[in-house]
Length: 192
Image 1 (spheres, helix red, strand yellow):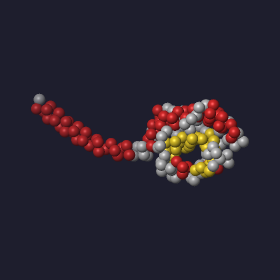
Image 2 (cartoon, helix red, strand yellow; image 1 turned 90 degrees about the vertical axis):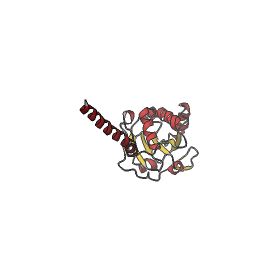
Image 3 (cartoon, helix red, strand yellow; image 1 turned 30 degrees about the horizontal axis):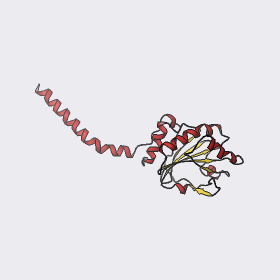
Image 4 (cartoon, one colour; image 1 turned 30 degrees about the vertical axis):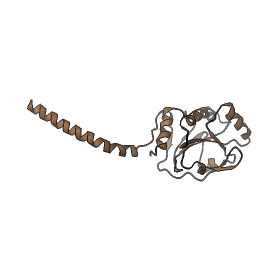
């Protein structure tokens, strides 16, 4: 019985030491963690190293010049789309729901339309689908499109609050899923 008591005492000491060390280890793990990329976000391609997004320019609804600098300090989900792109149209409501759910002073969904001659269709499209939470801009010359090396519509680029590309997802996705929200919140929290 004395031997069993001695083993139990030793086991308790080991467990106590582990429990005391655990709080010290947790911040380092969280700090070095990668964004969650499961389910709807499994196609999201992380950048090996975050680099500043190139200086791209586009137009607002009033045809005034705009850049990503207007969103400095915010996490930006930059979606390249067009009214004639069926997968783009499919994912727009989920982008709007994500923007409604977590959009605030720290996060914005920028819907960058590549509609050129079809640009007059954009406002009625947005209005008819009640996409009220998206910031809509235009890249009729496709300069942003080429500046970010976009090859497929839709493509959505996630940019952190420091203006660096976190990664991108080519093709449509469900942006209002728990996985997409977790990814955005991770980046909003300053995660890697």
